[in-house]
Every structure is written in structure tokens, then in C-alpha cells.
Image 1 (cartoon, rainbow, N blue to C red):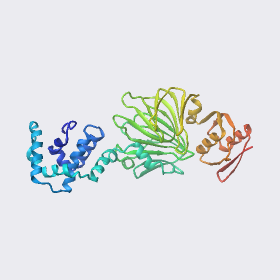
Image 2 (image 1 turned 90 degrees about the vertical axis):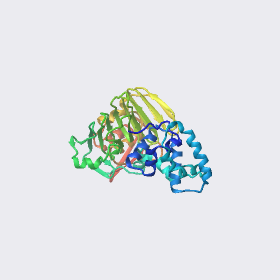
Image 3 (image 1 turned 90 degrees about the horizontal axis):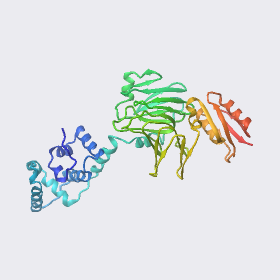
Length: 401
């Protein structure tokens, strides 16, 4: 239907009926077409900008230029394009509009608005969406939530099973979401959804491509209900254990506040709470390419832990079970600072832990059953360490002897 604009220059655009019409009288179809051309890098953006400035800018601002000067330059353009058999009649009606811009250097703010919209409004990046919807947003207090646009579906219970099929249709706890709710909750295929898990709760999320995510407490996952044809991207704030569905030609990318994790099909764990200084990626099987915000990329192999902070990153061999057992209801730790253990327990049980400001110097190894009562677990830790605690109004005050 449309021409190949990949080799178009300024004059080519100005002599093209579709370009002229769509710039002066844009429609939803034409705006979408040009935005896709820009996003997919199918055209020379500099030539496009020049043509747009020439046409749109002087359509609103018509400075005075002598007819003699216009005719001289117009003859040069006609000579240059004589071999192209272009429609001179149409462009002559705009010659004053086009040529005057060459001398005035008018720069129109609307141009930059147009380009910005082409890259952000139609296809907003998942990172930009996350920055707008996660950074300054607290986790829900009581219920697991599925959010899309202004619509929110609240899920009762301590855990939830959220599943999308290949067409993006949604089931929650094996129950199909009704057509009415689904049409409100998922308005279009390019919209991002959020699964928001409060502290003290957790969920299983199956994405439309078949990827499975076990979502830990206090975590938000942002995802499309159906993925694009060329890539699969989600954003994670918190912790997930992932089994990624293998696709050779469509990599799966997990974005966090500090890392981009790219895989083709693998099993791994990501811990990336925004309030934590360190982000951890532990690989169980497959292969992962982790790219930090500073641009440095690291290949991770099975049984390796990649730990990243703003100051440094490390890569070491670990026992992966210690990092992934939480998704089966266990917490296994080895030589772990007791402060880290208490932090994980406070998140899992959604309680406040008040710890001393000084480091304890205590490290522990063992296994906790997360289905057990928190007080029972803390009593067990107190028996093997010099820790003591008291509880009042769901707040646990800890002391190190």
C-alpha cells in the first residue's frame, strides 16, 4: 500500500502526495505509519525532520522571501529531479512554503513533540512505564492486584494463580475472567499489565508465551498480556523465580532498576527490590546475558551468582537451592548474616522488624519452613544464636547479645 521511503531525501518527501497530506492533515493511520517508520529505523530521520520542518513549520510561519530568489532555487530543484518524473504541479503549490524554510531556519516545537510521540506515546518502553508506575507507588496493603490502565482486579487470599493463554485471555485461580471485566482490564494488546504482590503474599504467573514466574512477596511484575512478534520483555521490582519458555528467534528480557537480563530459555532467580542496594541473579540452567546500567555485559553460567551494586559486581559459584527454595515454601541459607535472614522473614510475613543499628556479626546456616508461624521460627533462631526478640502490635524488636 505504501511506498519504500528508505532512500527518500527532503525534496522526495516534499513531492510525495502521501507525505504532504499526512503532515498537513494527519490521520490516525498516517501518524501510526510514520511513527512505525521512525521506530523501526526504516527512513533517514534527518531527511524526514528537514521535510517536516519545511512543510509544517512554514505552513504556520510564512516569512517574506523575494520571488526572484524563490524562482532561482525552484529551478535548481526541478533540474535535480527531472529524471524522477515527479508531479511538479502539486509541489508548486507548496514552493513558497518549502523554499522559504531554507532561509529562515525556523525550528518548530511541534516537530519534536511529533518525534517524541512517535517513540514514546505509541510504543512506550516498559522501563519508562515502570518508572511512572512503580518507583513512587507503594505495594498494596491487603490484596494481590492485577492492574491495567485505570482498572484493578483484587484477588483474595494469601496466594494467587494468574494465567494468560496464547491469545492473552486471563484466568485467576483457574477461573476465567468474565468478558466484561477482561475488556476493561485489558484494553489493547500493547498495554502493560501489573501484577502487584503485597508483603506477606505471593503468586504464580504464567505469561502468554508459556513462561512461568513464581512471584515472591512485595514484588511487582509488569508485562504485556500478549508479547510482540520480535521480543518478550517484562519488568521486575522484587523477586521472581523464572522458567522461561524457549524461543530461538524471540529472546526473553527481564528488566530491573539496575540490570537487563536476556535469555532464550532457562531457569533462574532474580532478586531486585528497589530498596535493596544489591541485585542478585542466580542461574539454575541455560545461559544468561546480564547487562548493567553502566553498559557492561556479563555471561552467567549454571550454578553462578551475579551480584550487582552501584559500586561493583561479582560473579561466583553457589548452591542454587539456597536461592530458589523460597518458591517451594522453604528458606535455605548458608553462612548468611542474620540481618539478611530477618529482612527476608519480615517481607514474607509482612511484619516490621526493628534491628539494632550496629552489625551483629552473626551468620547462620539452616532451613526454615515458611509455612510455620513466624514466632516459632524466631524462637528457633534465638536458640542457636545470641539473638532475642519481643513482639508488640505486629512489630518485632530484635536484640543481639
